[in-house]
Image (cartoon, one colour):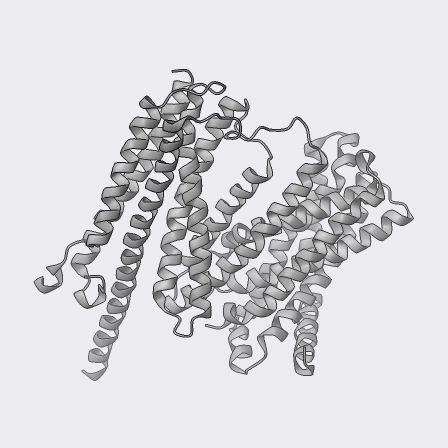
Length: 248
Length: 229
Length: 44
């Protein structure tokens, strides 16, 4: 590769650098404040500290899947079928799957402390687990290969089918659980009395994780764009090579 | 649905069913496989009362396992010599293909489920009365329609893809989870297992009907984009 | 602190995964931008 292509290193821009700075500040506060500065809860004790990372990661995970669904719909509806929408959908799903895994993990650790078990068959938990598996499938479909257009078409349909599927899963789990309702499971964050600092840490965490999500998605969709471009230029090079052979 | 769509659907369905009748893969391999699964469940659970209690769930689990095989087969015949591409190039209405393949899958599943229910009655000693039978038949029809629609939809998507044997269950299992939940509960009501009454089963059938309608409509709208490449 | 193991595990995994993903993303972006021409990078 020639040196002129190296004029710009990396995928950062002034905007994403600002996102990055804000995310570092907010996440730094969540780490220190969540672990040390905030008081313990009257009921839950120190277990409440898990909330400061669990709630924001869960929020980002759901946000990511909403973004994926909306971006897929935009790709499918838009007349130009702009590949930008497809890359945002893909980047957002990648980030979302990872955050969903972290949410399930921190949630089950928190549940072990507050409920005594790692898992309960509560509709919210079950639907979350299904969302996780569904988007693993979505990413697998994105990896099927073919042209960028094929990938975008397949994955946008899959994403929209997932939007149909998730409410059905949720509803049938709600119906299923309402049959054998045992002792009511307390929502882990329901009975926490929050003072000002705790509330601030939680909300600042949600803000920081959202900015982090924006940073991750804008970087990762640029990486996806470069991967597509690389693939196209490799294909072009192969075609030129072959044409030379034929002409020779 | 205009005339040509329904004619295409009928042609595709009868073609698929004729292939299955001649190749005898369903009768000689898939049916024995699901029968074996039912026997294996009995080995694993090893208790007559438990078997009677969970018979409904086992029938539907065995159906889901067989569904993957059937879906793969129904699209293997299309991708084997590029038949799906030829259909597409010939300008055949994709909605007709979708309905036709779903009908063929529906018929095969119904045959399979009938056998599984007979196996449950014989092996797991469940019994059904008149009103239970009405519920059971309605539940089977609605659940199978839903399974046939999503099976065709995701089967068409993974047709010809690398690693489809493993990708299809990953995509399909989360989607059919509502069918497993609802059909199992309705079937348990029909069998009156665990002190359930037949009347308690009907709300579940309603969810199954909604599922079939949603994915039938979703399939009609999206099938062309899934196979058109 | 009670349940200290659970809390440290949660924070460790969450922040560890995030830092890992950020580092991976930056590295991947640098490596790729070295091989891809500027015209394919509309954000520059």
